Image (cartoon, rainbow, N blue to C red; front, side, top):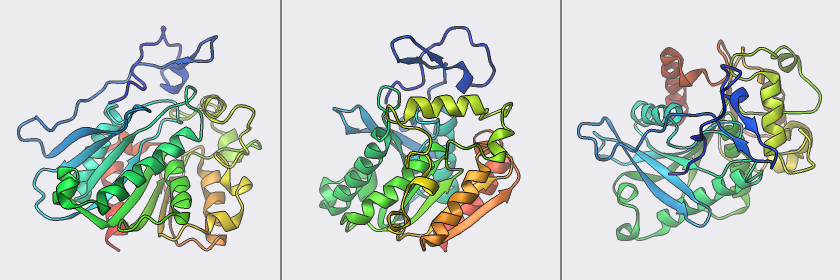
Length: 322
């Protein structure tokens, strides 16, 4: 429902989408064109129905719901946060819309994709705050009488099988949301797991995989540096806990995560070294983690490689059903 990521830029000087972002003198950015896909609820014969609902109108945040058309039973809920370095894409952006459709169908799940505020207009922790808002909205839905719930949730949501999930920067949002809700009573909503797919981590000192990523096809180093500069609070560097929890966040805070966590990575991802560090810190904090970091592939490969997407959903389904 938002307009994030659909502005037309000046002539790009790179085929990399992130490097087509133009920083303007007033501190704003001009984003490259990204195709937008409308919801499919009115399309006859759609395998997955989708529709948009407002979350916080004053902040212009919303949720896109995805429901397998053939479903008659209660389904697990997956609250999904898209990637884009906190500055690009939204819930209707073509890559993530189709990804969420496939997620709903492959996992037989009710998927809710959050359209959250983007930097630099809304720097972190705005996206993390919006993630928590979405969870609190779901808690209110779970607590409401069936007649007062959203119709799809009333008919199809299993509030005792709630999963928080995200890819890239969206995985950071899922991680921080899992920590934040530890101090809250979200009953009758019950969190059953957290999925962190290729978390978008940073730090001041370069890792080897970062240093080798100058010409990475998806996430070249200069693009990653730019996104952190635009997304982090003014004056913060990449060792802030929003970007480098392995170095900046105390173990006792991470240990608040009670749910099982699936952490996925790819060996060709410039962030793989940081993801391995992150896993070690999670394990040291006593978090129950399922670690899958040795698959071949690059950052965000599931968005454009059908075989990788299929394998991804197989692994996620095993995690959900465990």
